[in-house]
Length: 212
Image 1 (tube, helix red, strand yellow):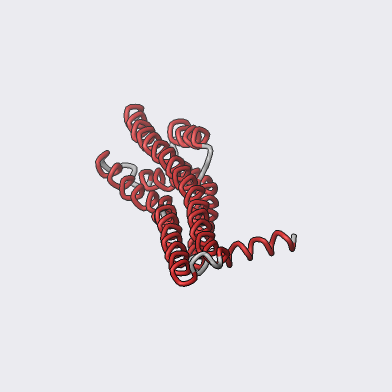
Image 2 (spheres, one colour):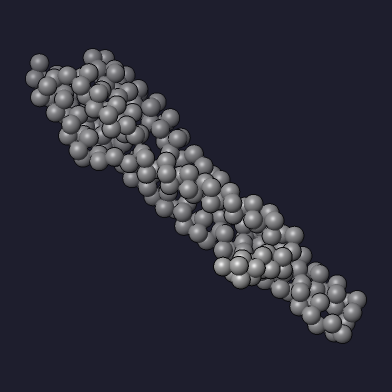
C-alpha cells in the first residue's frame, strides 16, 4: 500500500505544477458525481405503482386528500408535480396544467443542479492537461537549448511532465463525461415519467368529472 502511495506521489510530482489544478478539478468532479448519484437515486420511485395508487385514491375512494397523501408518502419529482396539480383540483384544466408546469420547472432545476459543473470539468480537464503538455515541452526545449544533449535526463523530465499532465487530464475528463451523459439520460427518463404522470392526472380528473 505504501509502495502504491509512493508511486502515485512521485507520479504527481513528476507532472509539475499543473497537477495541482488538475487535482482540484478531479476532486470537484468526484464530489459532484457522488452528490448527483445520491440525489437521483433518492428521486427515483416506482412510478407505475405510484400512478396506480393515485388513480385508486381519485376514482375508487374519490378523495383528493388521499391522493395528496400518496404524493407525500412517495416523494420525488413526479410526486411533487402531481401534488401541485391535485392542489388545484376543481379549477380549469389550463390552471391545473400551469401549476404542474411551474412545479416541473423547479423539480427539473433540482435534478439538473451540478450538471453544468460536470460538463465544465469534462471540458476543462483535457485543456489543463494540454497546457501542462505545452509547459513541459517548453521546459524540455529550454533545457536542450542550455545544456544540449549532455544531460538527457533533464530533457526527459520535461517530456515526462508533458505526457503525465495529458494522461491525467484525459483520465479525469473521460469518466466525468460518462457520468454526465448517464445523469442526463436518467433525467430524460424523469422528464418522460413526469409528462406521463401529468397526462394521466388530467385524464383522471376528466373521468371523475364524467362520473359526477
